Amino acid sequence: MIHQQRGSKVSEVNAGNWREKLRVQIVNKGLRLTQQRLLICEIFFEELTEHANIDELYQKVKRRNGSIGYATVYRTLKLLTECDLATSIQIGDGTTRFEPVTEHHDHLICTECGKIVEFENDEIERLQEDVAASFGFILTSHSMELFGTCQNCASN
Amino acid sequence: MIHQQRGSKVSEVNAGNWREKLRVQIVNKGLRLTQQRLLICEIFFEELTEHANIDELYQKVKRRNGSIGYATVYRTLKLLTECDLATSIQIGDGTTRFEPVTEHHDHLICTECGKIVEFENDEIERLQEDVAASFGFILTSHSMELFGTCQNCASN
DNA sequence: TTAAGTGCAAACCTTTTGCTGCCCC
DNA sequence: GGGGCAGCAAAAGGTTTGCACTTAA
Image 1 (cartoon, each protein chain N blue to C red):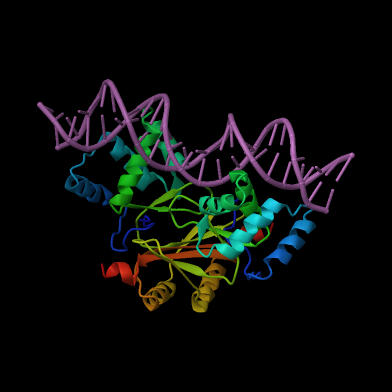
Image 2: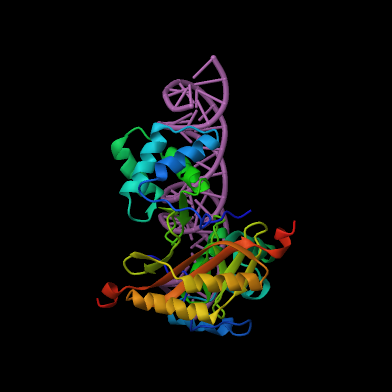
């Protein structure tokens, strides 16, 4: 069984409501809202604008709670993914990166400087559905990364 | 510097001409066409129809040359990637998979059974170019994976 | 001849897991 | 109070690398 890389397109999290969504999901699963989870989530949802990998997140978390463990960060991100509050993306640098589930979007990545631009394009999405349907698939998610050179790097 | 996941769209390798392309590239780089490289390439280009990961390839290679090492397979696939004869794809199962560079295509992946269908869609490609251009990017490659449930799995 | 390549094992990196003690509910 | 959780360290993959020997050119 291959893990899906994105959650459903339904959910939308903005800075304001992740706490409530997290609480509801955690309670429903019979889990607990610990200080560590809260801290990691605060930083993940409110301080990190970039597409952070676990280590980047861990470093930021550690500054506020020096005793926190690497494993806790991993376990929390896994939990967030299961709760559809985060999704993982792989841009090919050897680490898994995470981002909050917001409106769905894809990525445009500069292979020179690593810059990541988010975009969405309804027309492409529609065509993707068509393609999937033509092979008898029911589409649940997708990932699309466009690689190229950004304006800045092209002129250097 | 992030590695590109696909080579340029120019090259096209079919069963017949990988040998010559490989030879030319290897000679140009001042490298050597060893027995091990040839064996690995034969299996990669002519025996493996699936999107194989290193281990699957290694197992097949080992059957024909029991003394071959894991590292050699890795190094050869890296070489093929640099020569634009192979590309790596990540479908999220934790391993890197490789496929011969042929005509460009994308992937439709069943998250239940792992089945991979290749497809291409010119209209999507054209829209991708448009999107990239609108952000000032010059597109060199892309990867697109659609995740869903295949007909077979949907009916079970 | 000789520099690149191979095989092996060890190193590396990212991610997961087992376990003991801790703390949320 | 009890079961999920945190922290730690060790394990577990997948991939890379250092080194001494081998081999293609």
